[in-house]
Image (cartoon, rainbow, N blue to C red; front, side, top):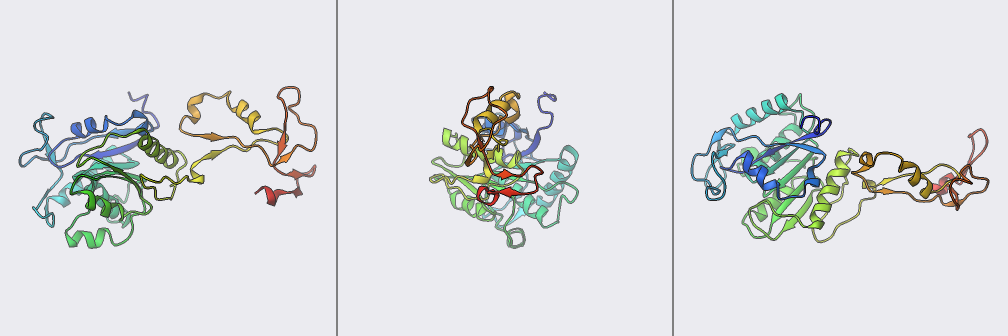
Length: 308
């Protein structure tokens, strides 16, 4: 297992109120394995045993845990600071972690940790968290927390799953609005980890690929009803002089397919037909192209601006 996970980035997955890491792991198992293929997922249990009845007692065995406790109107909480200290220590001991995945209470807690890290309050020795997957998340309502944590947009790439059939819909949307350029995926279910259709799997996998491999955000907001294509999220290959996109594709085919398994590769042809003899004549059929022209000592160029 360690060999299979070598080089993969870690995601810290925080479960919901009075459930467990094992339960969240089961919930996420409904998703296509390709979604989190680039990662190692870590599912710790909350630090406090459940202080009351769990909603999953009939469907999943105990023990159950909670990260902290809150009042009925969600405006007050107990043991939150101890929970934050515990998780910061956990991350520094078992990390580094590349991102968070959180469900319900775990999502609210994850977002708070992201906000506090961005403000330099916690995790000062831990690398900045780069991505966040929120499922039925929400903001803290306590003004002492909310007026500090959410006063500025949280500049971490985030995807938010919002259920249409639950009171948590509006709080989930409010949490998404606290992030810069959130990806929002709506589903017709309630307070649950939804099953993903092919469109959602492609959308989330693409979001993860472009962030993890290219180390940059797609930087567009995507609603479930209307996907925008991000040009900077694609990998484009520029071939050599007097060849073609098809020839470069053939050249790259010599490499192990696993190298670019996470990419969709595009091999366009140059904009100008070849103006001279190609070095691949006899080994690959025409037509041949070039992107621009240059002199023998490569100090002068023609049509470069038009090409760019």
